[in-house]
Each structure stands twice: as C-alpha cells, then as structure tokens.
Image (cartoon, rainbow, N blue to C red; front, side):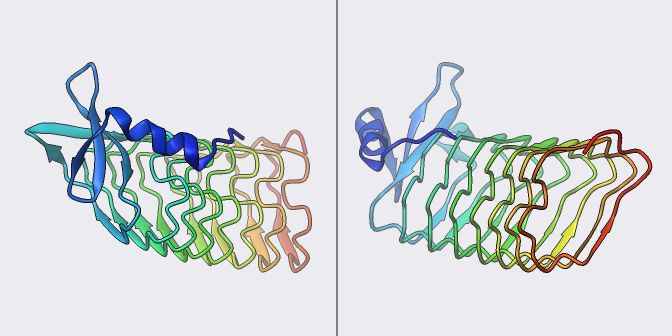
Length: 219
C-alpha cells in the first residue's frame, strides 16, 4: 500500500486551477484531472466538463485526508479513480460510482469509516488491493458480474459488513480480502472462482456458513 502524507498531497495543488471547491489540471491529452478540494469542502459535485473540456480522472491521493467531506457526486465522464483518491475521508457516508468508471485503484476508499453504502458499477473488472479496507460502517456490498478479481485486503476490517454478493465471473479472491469482517455470517462463492488466497476470511468470527464450489483448485 502506497503511503503519502497529506503535506505532499497539498503541494500537488501548486500547478492546479480552482473551480468552485475543487482543484484541477489539464492533462497532455486535453482532458481534465481532478487533483483535490478546498479544506472547507463538505460536499463535492464534480462536473463532467470544466472550461469546455471533459473531466475524465481523479488523481492519486486527490482527496486524501479530507475529513470534512461527507458526499461526492462523480459524473459519467470519469473513467479512472486513482490510488488512495479518497483515503482517510472519515466523514464520507456514501458514493455512487458511475458506469463510466473502469478502474478503481488500490486504497481508493481506505479508512472511509463512515461509508455505509457504495455502488460498484458493471464496468469495473477488478477491485484493487485495500480499496475498501477499514470501511467499518459498510454494511453490504454487491460485486457485479463484470469483476473478475478481488485483490488482497479489498474489504479487510469492514467490521459492519454482514452481506456480500460475489458476481458470477470472479475467478480469484486475494489474500485477506475479507479478513476481520466480524459481522459477516455467511458467504456463497460462485462456480467461477478457482483460487482463494491465504487468510481470505481470517478472523471472521461470526462466519458460520461458507459454500465452496467444485471449481476451486487452491485455497
């Protein structure tokens, strides 16, 4: 897991322009990347265009440690959410990820401990390492059929997570992907899964039922 201090994140604004309560930069391809927000921002509505140019990405660590941020609206123009983009946004309660997003990078929502609801669209093919790690208020998650891989620690320490629906095209579940999910009581692993890595459900102390399909070749 990449660790970057908030101080370094703030310096990234030096070359950014401001639009309302967000910061942005124009990329070499002429599209716009969101780089951060003002320190007082509580609600962010990312526009689909700025200065007439499409907003297509959220930079690595863009909203790192924005502890006052409670809600974010992501437009259908966004295709990529960067590494640790919303890391430690401890007041963020819900987020809807549009169908345009194809990549959610590692640690994107790490330690968003107030996040109770998240919608993962059918455009996502992989849930990166630590993506929702320590989202301790997240109660249920549906992993769509588009996803083929759930990476290491993806939902680790989601202590309120009681319901998980795993899509029918997931082939691998990474190490400690659901470790310390102490409210999880049952899980059904679809026939598409061939590999479950070490510690996937470690310390799930209330897990009483697991259905393992014949497709599994390694645990």
